[in-house]
Length: 322
Image (cartoon, rainbow, N blue to C red):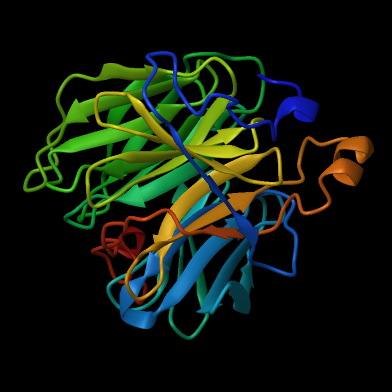
């Protein structure tokens, strides 16, 4: 990982290692509030709301996109950490809580589900997303020194849970190709972005293959644009990178905050790139140098994102209620 003091340096040549031109964009501050560990931005098109979480504070936030800023309008506090939030078909929310799932009904009622992770390990749930059919996928991360002991899970419509990937260390960003037939998944600790064939109709997953290995920072959250390219937040590097589905670097977005954590396209046309960042893990000197760490940022990058699928469950009667 690059030193924080080097994190905002631009590519002097504007080229990658193959000599291809790499475009550079700049992100602008889009929130007054700074978060300890902002994560998991989502655009819910039917309600025109932005969703995101503050992992360490256990907060789920709902906000409005107003011109060049995102304003929180509602917040929900959960016990412990939260890893991700997605909208549900009834307008409520499905949340990856510390070690299990939870729902927040449209009236704000919180319903905590059973524990999903084994009670014999020190782990928590992390990033999650819905597949094109509305199934919820979520991964776990190790809170101790264990490696290759975490999993990527999928919640089925009947409430059962399937394991889609094992031998993971820090499960992170998830998204699908525009046709839904390829799934992308980040394992942050080894710095690997993997891909696998995916059947949107059945949820069947093919064999995982390595797409990218990132060694000059830590890949975190990701999203896919309408052209099928991947936008990946690079923790520790103060930037977001755009890669082709073959792993070729196309562009970077410079962010004045070293710990970029995740990305999503938001707005009526889904043409604004929203970036979450964190203050977590930064020293006082780092925070003095990068005072906007932890805020939300927006960038105009000349493309648009895909619609966000809603969870196919009901927050009034969560699947764990039978």
